Length: 409
Ligand code: FES
Ligand SMILES: [Fe+2]
Image 1: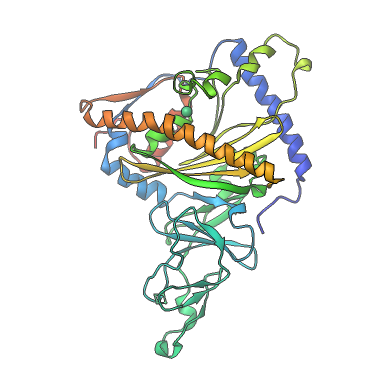
Image 2: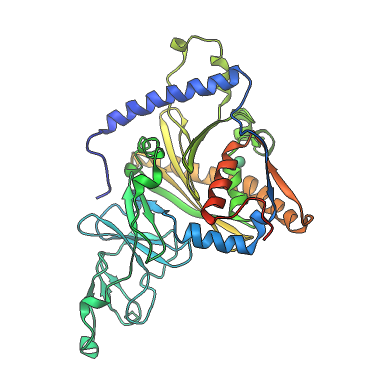
């Protein structure tokens, strides 16, 4: 079954979140009181080739998407033995299954007879498949990847049945996240090491309890990092999101907390201003929330949109060549769906967020990207010091590819 930490009960995580919400509130009140925002040391220019170069895109596909641990889904996407999900966003079609022993495993979605696709659905499909039956000649595999059925077996007389199991990929389930390395020859995944100091931050989200409610795909005609940049700064709230977050939150104010290659970024809502100058004992109890970036491509927004009603929104961004991208977007009920009304609220959260992201964030990303194409050869975009999360993301991705940020390639 999905991993949970038996040492920490749900009630205790509630307490942990409340405590961390208060600590976060102190930081947000401080930046409003002092009229400042967390900043990088200096602005960071990025040559347009960082977004446009085919060579850089190829390097990212190889070093980042093929060889880093990538989030394929949450534990709740395959809650029961025999459940399977398709993960095909990094290139090869991959299946993630949950075996009878409760273990999540990943395999190439490829029959070992003559290569047919075992599950023909595309991501974000998931469902029960206690037996993976090939649509071509009906070879059959169990969720542990073992070949358990082979019609006309005598035709393969000298071919050991056990020698034709599915091709397994490194996979690890940790803190409710399922990581896959899309390289069959890659090293096993040490998820705790991959997360480092970010692990304890993610643990409080109790992602192992999250139940999927609605999933879909958002797209932009832009490099995937150009779209990813829209998730890391609140500088654009007032202008771009003038009728949504722009009226509820401060613009250009953020608390940025890097943890290795990951980070959390928090944006103050307008109610924070009322707490300035008040004794902490007068502050209201607030709910924990924040934008959690998991290197290289996953953004988890966790928060209570109305007090006490949490949503977990997971955005996983992927390249589709250098100049196009897509996002696997999913909304989860963080602690399970409690009622039909709750389900409807989660669905509405999906629809509202998808609309804003697609028609506002990804609109400016697509339009801006078209401009980069015709911009002068030496054009650089510039990440402001007030957009520190973007600096961290670009530096980490470039480092993984062993490429500088100013290279024209
Ligand atoms: S290719 Fe799968 S059974 Fe033949
Ligand atoms: Fe935005």
